[in-house]
Image (cartoon, rainbow, N blue to C red):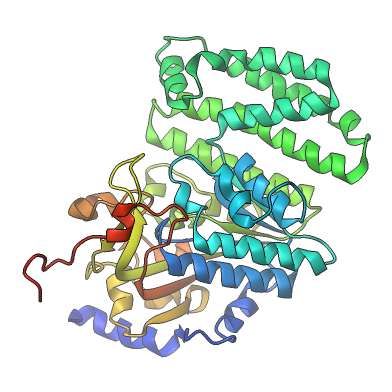
Length: 438
């Protein structure tokens, strides 16, 4: 039932939304609004909703084909995504997209090892075969400390064995933690072990100093390999700081991570000589933090930093859903489950959009943002979903019209299908009426 104060808003929103029916013209108006933007940031309200992934991929295909976007940059670790990038460009040893995505082993693997991403990477490889310039697939995140160390050592082992030996000695500080980044961060933060910061910083500086020499050796191929190595070295330096900082407070570690992702985005665009980039991340990263209660606590986001650095060249798209199913875990590190998503709260944007009574639609917030309330609740489901504490765990207040340029609402959604399905996922949650039936 619509609350009295929302009735007029629902009617006005319903009159201006763009209904989506699966037609090829669904996103024509959105493409026009994106225009010549260099950076298009596309979010998701959960890390486990099939429709968010599918529609994001559909929009991205159009951006690549119709507007010549040069890269897709995602909320994933750099070395793992780079393996998929190599495959998408028609190189490497992987024979299929599924094989190219095997680098995604750490929790939550289903974010990238799922059926939708496999289909997109296969499409990207096929598109690149006939494209004048290939479109790449890159990771923005910083969790891959040890795999990035391996990437730096592998590159230097090929181009400069002496430098590789020096790099190995600098990175030896991390070896005692047996690839447990959290153990390193805790020990360094509490003073139980020496910080590895100095070696990580020195290695990045040296690699940058020798970049010109390395780049001259084999032309563009060498430049791509060098860029990959430098990003890995920069990631080691920032990941070291991140894991050490995360035990000191949420805001500082969150900001370090999002600044790393925003900096990686900028460096990627520069490497692509000004090429246009699509970003795939959660709403909580692509949305502008200044429009949220989290921003008022001091957090910033990739979306905020992109808007500040590239004013007039950034377009941000968010997603919402009212109810359905989601792939998520109950606790960090647990197996993925197929969980029911509770109906959105009446005082949330999800509840408001549900009352519009259109199964799927887009809303141009730049033009019609005045129609949505300021500081209404918005739901965010990451890789963990705890419906029993949903208000505390998954809702926060936002000003939607300032957070995004466009929002896409899909009223009922389904769970993203992992490549490695588990009994918990296959079974799903029993219906709420179990064991009595309806």
